[in-house]
Image 1 (cartoon, one colour):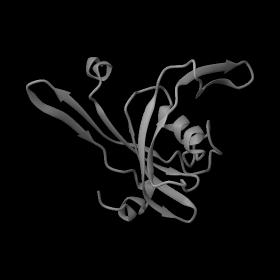
Image 2 (cartoon, one colour):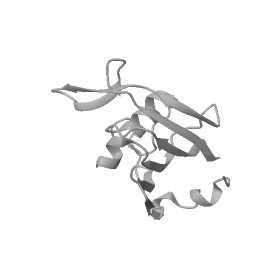
Image 3 (spheres, one colour):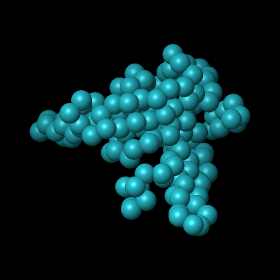
Length: 144
């Protein structure tokens, strides 16, 4: 928790988007705030008065009108990647029931790795295998 607050923690997420971005890569700078209504409950929205949020992204593959995208958030706001995809790119994460159409098969967002730096020591690196629901998408990704 302290490492996240100091910055320097590297997070890598993979998502299949409900569309293909116009660019191959970029950085989304969009402050985020929480709104709540009795009818719809709470959600996170782009809000100039909200907390700063920054996410670097790059498209890894595209097929059948969808794209596999790598997201590297520099900040760790609630629903940051989901809102930055849906609002910043205009393309929600496939299967996102809150910010997208909630397509069947589950939300296609995966926390692939987390690297926590440690002063004077090797960083802690945690990697998670891509879930089966992603099918062969990871194999289509272009190498770094």
